[in-house]
Length: 137
Image 1 (cartoon, rainbow, N blue to C red):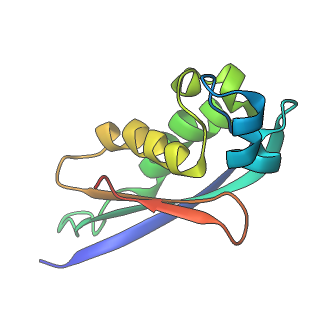
Image 2 (image 1 turned 135 degrees about the vertical axis):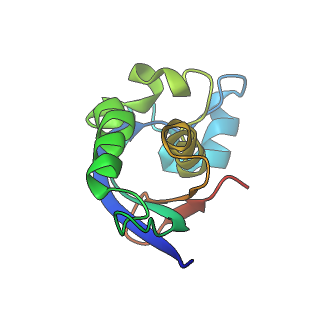
C-alpha cells in the first residue's frame, strides 16, 4: 500500500511581541531586538499542513481535503487570524509566541482531529524567508 503526503496551504495575519515577563526591558531587547516592541508587530503567516498516510482503497484519499480545510479553519484561522497572539489567544498566555512555539501549538491543535494512523507536519512561514517545520518530534 502506497504512502502519500497531501498538503493544504492556509494563512492568517496576527500580531505578537516576543518577550519574557521575568526579564527586564534591557534583557528582552538584547535577546529579541525589534521583535520585543511593546506595541507589538504583525506578520502575514503562511501555513502548510501536510498529512502522510496510506491511500484509502475505497476513496483514493489519504484524507478528504475538505475535512482538512475545515480543521485548519476552526483550529488555526478562526483562532489566530487578526488577533494579538499575546493578548487574545489563550495558548500564548504564558508561552512566548515565537514561530517555533506557534508551529507546535498548531500541531497540537490539529493532531487530535486526525486519524491516529496519519502523520502530521506543520510548516509555518513567518516571513517569506523565515519558516519553521514541526512534525511532533
